[in-house]
Image (tube, rainbow over all chains, first blue to last red):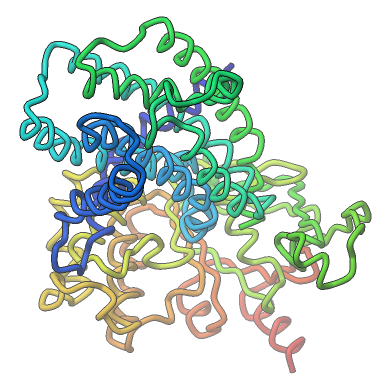
Length: 261
Length: 248
């Protein structure tokens, strides 16, 4: 327990560094490109067009206002999956810091999660623009987006702590994670609705924590209702457990990082 | 307390396989036909054995030795980056490491941006960096290029900027690894002046170098790191001679 508290106390102590690295991470992504920060909007927009073409134009799946439905799941998924792909290699990628300067390595694993969270938040206006043009109501449920983001943050951070530290010793994980994420994308109700899934397969969605995350956003943005608080509460408990497991594993492994990277 | 750094019976070993190959993936095992080889025959490479060392405050302490003798490992133990496998390391004061200059520089960012991030990494606050910014840039002599991305810098410029940030962190103990060979003669002289200034203001420095003239000029005390142990002659010259006679 002491180590868990220290883990978070160190993060707090280094908040100026985290802040600086997050800002740098946001700028670095599009540094040197002509459209620059505009890519934050353009990337999800283009990805959305691809899915729109496949799932709406080619195989009309019957979901009304499909762009908004798609976006409300796609944007948080991009936060989640990019955090994991960036995060899994973060400790190894930060070798020149970890082996040369003394500071808590959890800083390095936290940064990609926060960078992608900021990217997610910055891309939300795009969703609002579509909602505006499709004359979809925006109301009080929008407030619920804050707890949903927090729960997703806890979940993502926990997973990134696990994969980034284990990846130092087991580098195949990087490949495994990217493949699992592809699978994850299609077993999360992002491009289709849960109603379209045959009942006998529904259990897959109940064990996938991202189902509740994505559905919560859909409830808020697409259905303009509050998310299912009970589901969100379950997810919160699961996320806390994963975060603690992540901190525990990370703390166990971190001492030997400088020797292995 | 008169000592800045004390090492008591410090031992450090690395797992041999961790040195040979940092990791093993399935593909590698397939390629090398060691499919089922477990790393059960863990062999250890004893890098440092039973090290006892005390470094007095406000002195310049030099470490010499061949490549791979364990000088940098020793430095990283003092910095707290490595944990000793046995014994203990006691450090009194704030440590700043200059093991690699510009650790954490991002090539796409300007010198100005990198000074801020590097400063924060080394433990300065944003306010402190702002206050010292002009001094840092002036010391590195990069006023003209500070708003250019560091990828456009020459190696020397890059090193100068990194060094300049690090010496402005204002530590109690500064650990310097091989980096004083940066820059031209004029800049080296400035570095040496800075070290002297540090020393007279009561700071402690631990220097690893292969430049014997620099060691002779700067250090109050020198050890030779050899075969995992330390050797110290009666005088600095004797220690240096022991090192040089071994290489010849």
